[in-house]
Structures are given as C-alpha cells and as structure tokens.
Image 1 (tube, rainbow, N blue to C red):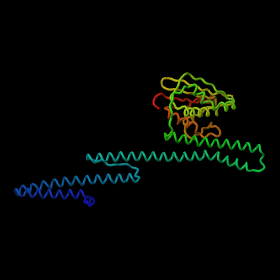
Image 2: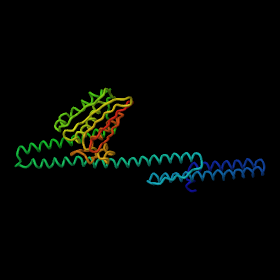
Image 3: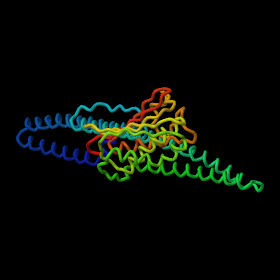
Image 4: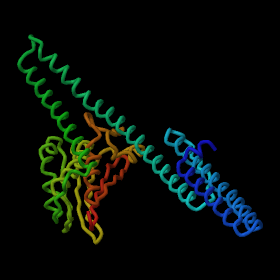
Amino acid sequence: MRELWRNREVRIQAGLWVTAGILLGAAGFCLNRAAGGMAVAVWAVLTVLNWGNVIRRYREIRRLSEETDRILHGEERLELEECREGDLAVLRDEIYKMTVRLREQKDRLEEDKKYLADSLADISHQIRTPLTSLNLTVSMLQQEEMGGQRQRVLLREMKKLLGRVEWLVESLLKLSKLDAGSIPFHLEQIELEGFLRQAAEPLEIPLELRGQNLLFDVEEGSFLGDRTWTQEAVLNVLKNCMEHNPTGGTLRISGRENPLYAEITIEDEGPGIDPEDLPHLFERFYRGKQAAEGSFGIGLALARAILIRENGTISAFSRPGKGSCFSIRIYKGTV
C-alpha cells in the first residue's frame, strides 16, 4: 500500500473521492438525516468497490512489471500470468509478443555469432595453409647454395600459392557482398549456346593439359540473368568437374529451355560423390572425401549464392564410379 500512495495520480484521485463524499454527505444532510445517512452509505460502498478495483489493478501492473524486468535480465522462462481485465489483458498480450520477439532475436544473434566464429576459424585455417608453404619456400630461397633452376621452380610455386590466396580472398569478398545484397545484377536475355561456350573458354588449356574432352549438347533457348556473374557460377562448377575427371575423361555440357526455366547440366566421368558429402556439397569450406588437393571448399558455395540471386537453383547427383552431374536451373519470372 505504501508504494500505491507514492503514486501522485492515486493521491489526487483519493483527494477528489473524499471531497466528493463530503459534498455528497453534506447535500444529503441538508435535506434530512435519513438522506444524509443514505448518501454516506452509498459513498462508502462505492469507495470500497472502487479502491478494491484500484488496488487489484495496481497489483497486476506491478506483477507485469516484475515479470518483464526478470525477462529483460535474462530470465529464460516466460510465464506471464493471465490478466482478467480488458486493458491489462491487452497489455499482457503485447508484452508477451514483445518478449517472444526479443527471445527470437537473441537466438538468431547467437546463431549468427556462432556462424561468424566458425567462418573466421575456417578462413584462418584456409589462409594459414598456403602462407605456411610460402614461408617454407622463402626460407629455401634464402639458401645460398641453391642453383638457378631450383630457384625458378620455387618462384613458380610461390606464384601459384599467392594466386591461391588471392583467389580465396576475392571469393570471400564476393560471398560477403552477395550475402549483404550490395552487388548489382545487370539483367539481360542471354542465349544459351553462346553463353556456355564463352563460360568454358578459360578451361580450354587446362582441359588440354589434362587430356580431357569437352562436349556441348545445347538446344536453342535463353534465360534472364547477369552474364558475368552467371559465367562465374558455371565456371566454378566446370572447374570442380574438371578436377575430378580422370585423364582422357569427358565433360558434357547441355542446355535447354522450357516454359518454366532454363536448365544447364554439367556431367563428368569421375569417381562420383560420396553419399555422405552430397547434402553438404554447397556449404562454405566443406571439403568432401573426394576433394581435390588445394581445394578451399568455396567454389560451389559461391556458385550457389550467385544463382540464388538470379532466381535459380543448383543441385548435384552422383553415380558411384560413373561420375557426377550438376543441374543448374534459372527460373523465369521476377529476380
């Protein structure tokens, strides 16, 4: 009750109520004693009912305040008691919805924090490996007795390692920008066959050095997308297939369009994908059992992020011992 009387509005209301009672009683007694007694009795009953309701409402508000305070200070359990009266029931419901949203936001922040920590650990590991190799190479180059031929070999190895680190950093920057939605996509209608042949051009020499063949089976068709980014997505898939394709093997690229989507299919003749790896194939930094030497586990994840921005999907199928097949679908409609 002491806390109740500290409330200025309660004190004002009490003063007005007492004043009204005095005036009501005085008016009744001016008429006659019976009227005065009746007025005082009615005022007393109304006073008890009114202040009983005030005290009950105050207790409910205080309870809501205490429960909200516990939630804001990390209380895990959420048990807001039911309020019987209209305004307080609405207030209770709003507080409940607010606390649920706060809890959901807290859970999402915890998930994002864990994901960020795991990503930083993965990035650190991926960069540390080639940097360690670079340090060893530099130490070997500092040896005075090393011949010129050996130095040239080590310098080529250093250039290769630096290229890997540069590619990793660029890919991570692209992924972060794609996640943030800060990369503008310039959409145009792209003809399938010309696009696929252009996307495969950077691999002509690597394929020749590996003794691999590249076959096209592309029907007439087109899709709406960003030429540069879609080429990067397709090229990353082609690189993955090339790295797992045996010497003398064949890569097959097919393309076709239907009323719903344009589909690009890339097949290799490698050992296939382990069934345990298939669900995780497009996760960042995931390296399956058949991962190529020096793989960072970024290329397929980047391809997937690009295609999602273009209203597309990518999936993989595998035939153990008979190769793998990647299917890219770019759907028609709003991107």
